[in-house]
Length: 177
Ligand SMILES: CC(C)(COP(=O)(O)OP(=O)(O)OC[C@H]1O[C@@H](n2cnc3c(N)ncnc32)[C@H](O)[C@@H]1OP(=O)(O)O)[C@@H](O)C(=O)NCCC(=O)NCCS
Image 1 (cartoon, rainbow, N blue to C red):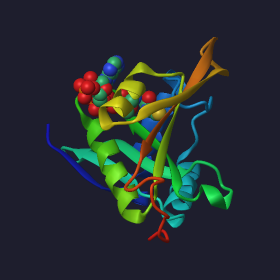
Image 2 (image 1 turned 180 degrees about the vertical axis):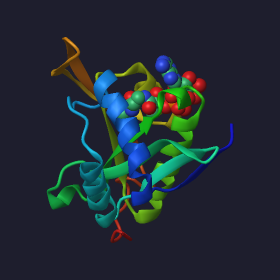
Image 3 (image 1 turned 30 degrees about the vertical axis):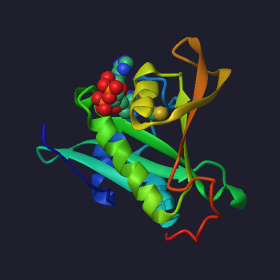
Image 4 (image 1 turned 90 degrees about the vertical axis):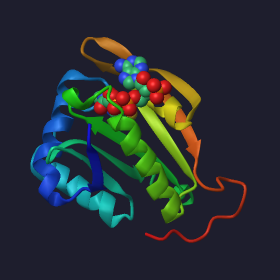
């Protein structure tokens, strides 16, 4: 496996839209029921990158096989040092360490930009996602039950959290975004 990571660009939107659509239609990580189209995914990417958050692509043999980005957990400004992460892979790329590569790089990138906490909001309490976040050092921070209903069943949400850099042990510096 040779995986290269690089910042995602609008040129990646077709592949990203396809990967996300598969997860929306078949999985429980996303609570969306209808896959967004390319224009909407491009708008979302623009909002994320313009907000100073990293958006990364994983490339294998010239094809985009996964992506990860950080975004605001909540928009009120005192939350500004806390980011939420998202990681999605094409089905064939799963279980081969690509998620770990992407998430570790996203953590490093967010630390460099001055963010101090990262939260994973794990829809459907997906075992693969919980295992991925544990492997990177996240701890479980709570569980909400019955948060979603999809594919004919109730879903729980697991929160996991990782301190970035000095976390809450020192005052934050201005974000370099
Ligand atoms: C969740 C996801 C990103 C994980 O990425 P991945 O590349 O498959 O995971 P990795 O191969 O890097 O494995 C990371 C760890 O999780 C474990 N793991 C991976 N898949 C697993 C599964 N299905 N069940 C249990 N553990 C699993 C691995 O053993 C590894 O642990 P280790 O380092 O202690 O050995 C990927 O499966 C995916 O895209 N799923 C659909 C979308 C999704 O759920 N996204 C998360 C949104 S919160």
